[in-house]
Amino acid sequence: MAAAGTNSLSGINIKSSQNRLLIKNGQVVNYDGMEEADVYIEDGIIKQVGRNLIIPGGTRTIDATRKLVMPGGIDPHTHFELEMMGAKVADDFYKGTRAAVAGGTTTILDFVLPEKGQSLMEAYNNWREKADNKVCCDYGLHVGVTWCSPTVKKEMQQLVAEHGVNSFKVFMAYKDTWMLNDYELCQVFETCAELKALPQVHAENGDIIARNTEKLLAAGITTPEGHELSRDEEVEAEAVNRACVIANQMNAPLYIVHMMSKSAVDALRLARQKQKQPVFGETLAATVGTDGTHYKNACFRHAAAHVLSPPLRPDPYTPEAIIEALTIDDLQLIASDNCTFHEKDKERGKGDFSKIPNGVNGVEDRMAILWQKAVNTGMMDPCRFVAVTSANAARIFNLWPAKGRVAVGSDADVVVWDPQLERTISAATHHHALNFNIFEGTRVVGSPQYVIVNGRVCLDDGELRVAEGQGRFLPTLANAPYVYGEEAPGTPQHATVHYASDSPRQSPHRVTNGTPTELHLVNKQLDGLSVSGASTPTGRKMREPGQRNLQNSTFSISKELEGLDTKTSVRVRNPPGGKSSGLW
Ligand code: URP
Ligand code: ZN
Ligand code: ZN
Image (cartoon, rainbow, N blue to C red):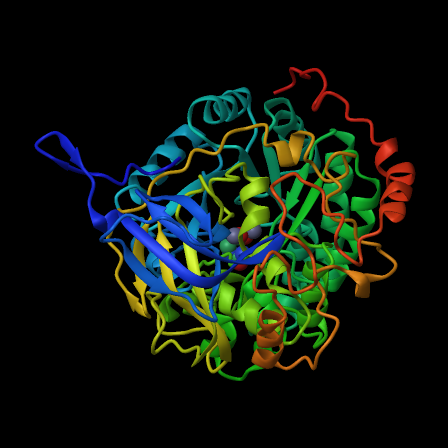
């Protein structure tokens, strides 16, 4: 995983001081704690973390005083160069990953989405060809399963065994293109379990959407407002519940992509209490940073630019509820689902909302939006911010601890985050290939000042310096310990942080003191750190990976033991998938 950061000259490897970097005086933030520490990077790898480091001469130094030094973001859900609904995504792998890096994201996971009947291997090879020479940061691939046959099953096996794919997405919506029926979902989930891969699901009821769309259009409702009306919260929540039931029956873990509503999160919460295998929920920057009232905008361009599926919700409490869910671990990650379409492509749906290509921006602004809406408001502490923007994705997709952690031996994907940097998000200044931004006009306090990708300073005091093709393909291996092993949520050994579901306000990631106003609050958190560091804004101590946190004042051993009695001890981890049905 680690990059060979040496220069080759006439076959002789020479080390250059350009490969050495010291980030000094910052607060290192990991998902499980914060400490004052310097970070020394050499040849694309973090070599030392601590104080009074002994550093070779000629090393470049970045001063991170009053800055946070965090793992580079991992966006687990992007679509670059995708063709869907008759249009092509505006951001290609170069512009898309460049925008990612500008916003502090140093790894993206994109989707290969074969057409029905198309070979998965062929689609995968096409995607590698598109991406390999363009990406500015490391990337991995999920593969969609849009049809079922014995060859599809064989190709899933091949992708896992030989091509570094450990996750497969299925669709319960997009009838007539990507949607599978429940029997097919059973087959795919079962196969994933056999392969120790992770099934991902787009959870919306495609049949209800199709029927509602017919009725709305017949009634003369053709504008973007019809998009949300055709697929309200219940349509999403029903599918979340059904996907969870199917996964439970097939004894498979599950990852639900782009969860957009309170009802869907409620369904997930209930399911997570009874599933035999872990279930993970992902939400989007769009859900946190904007809302469904934009569908009522009289300007088609504006309203259509917000169309994605599942849709943004008009309920004004949704963004806060979703942040709450992220904070208390009802949701585990935030992605972008970056899938940008030019205005002329969105216009395909003028006169018929169901033809508006689905997708919005987000890969660049995901981290700043969450920081602004969750950390600056006092709902979430920086450790949880790291968990949901990078560490959890690294663990779920088996990139951990090379990715998602600032620690010795990890890849040097690092963000120096300035919690005082103020800016206003705008299409005029973003790096996407289109001239619309769904977060237009949002003022954020907190953004990356430096972004280091595999040891290279790619955002240098605000100046973007990426090279096309500098990123690498990341093979993701099956059987992730966080999904199938002893680290999986729900196994007794996991139990690093127990959240009492009846008292979310006690979450170790909720900021409980201070006035919840932006920067003051974050600064207060930073000021609270001891000189020797090693404590978190919520008073926790730094831990090594896997070490249980017994220091946290809100952490209750007795509660955890109760939890083991009532919940985890009844989990029977059958051999995933059981016997192959041979039905494919
Ligand atoms: O509207 C969306 N989400 N577009 C991208 C395709 C998908 O369903 O993820
Ligand atoms: Zn989807
Ligand atoms: Zn998507």
